[in-house]
Image 1 (cartoon, rainbow, N blue to C red):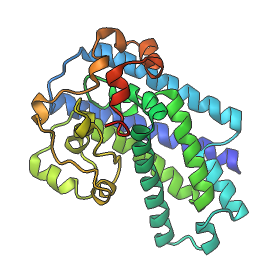
Image 2: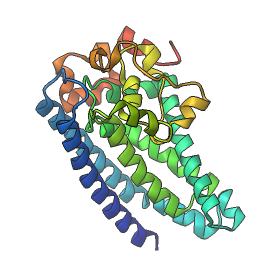
Image 3: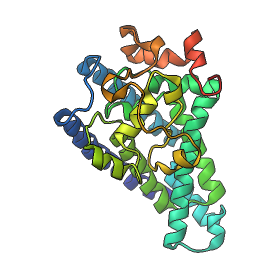
Length: 281
């Protein structure tokens, strides 16, 4: 049963990924928000190499542990594991609670990636991109991907998140990560309305600023409410979207564009790099 469910999950996620990636890529090409500082072809070639590598890592993890997040949810459901499964209900309220739990955990995980130095060193690879566009939304260190998956497994088991919630959440998270990293110029009024319920590109772009006080805000990927509730919300960059610098100062050199150099970022020392985490700011 678990194995049968995993294949449709992979097909669904891949289909949404391909369609949405192409859609956001076309939109940011047609309506760009910010001028690029680095060659798009070079960045995309290297970012896509990382994305492909992460896909292979996740498939390898599946074969190693024998399951995915949906498989863990199916196991929890069949065994009655987790708090929500104790309710013995699958109504809309249980679905909503499960989704909100997953989204808050992703927010908290992101904060943790900035606050805990060893995790920040992994997460720096994502922030080292000197431009931000749809490809940045999927550029993460494979070790961070593995840690994130482990956290999801634990949350699913503890709370008994349903398989339906997990697969929808994974698709939505993938989609919103591409959306809010896209270099897409939304009309200000539309952005103001959307960011009441969704993290927009302008909102998340602040998070990729070189300034530490901006870098350590706007952690949400899907819902913007956690940032507001936890006082980590910053509406706009102080330098403005057109003039703000994206990335980390210690990684602006061209040599850090290659996949090998990106993967080595967690193991590179540097004063500024170690001081950029929220725990040291």
